[in-house]
Image (cartoon, rainbow, N blue to C red; front, side, top):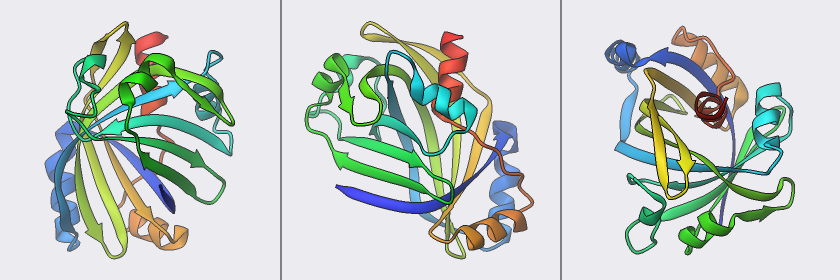
Length: 206
């Protein structure tokens, strides 16, 4: 099990601005630290959709539960530990920082069929999937990620109903809230409260 506490600040842009944002970061001597990854996250919620509502209202603390893999999954049947490596993640947004707890999960297919019992949210079932590409940069102590080619998917039985998005999300992550904010502002970005789960639910269910 891995636990991380850090400040996270997000800026919402569009895919057409990708090259200009990369140019800006490299002009400030940000360096690439990992290869581009394809990420697939399946989000869970209870029957009252409390995780979605808390996110929309900006309540703290609030929690998201997701199953993540660094591979493309076209159906629930692809959620086989023999094919893909999965992490079960609990992300808790608090007043001054975000906390993420993650652990390798050995039976994702069963989890997607039966759901998960969470101490705060109760019985949660898979609701939506979000797939995107992520670039990683290091900028004076902050990890900067660029998420693009986002696809929001509603879960229908064993299949996914997909909806493409032109949005791109820039995120700064640092253990120091003060340093993270200063570096973020230095790039001229505007902060926004943005949740991939909330957007996915809004676009595919509402």
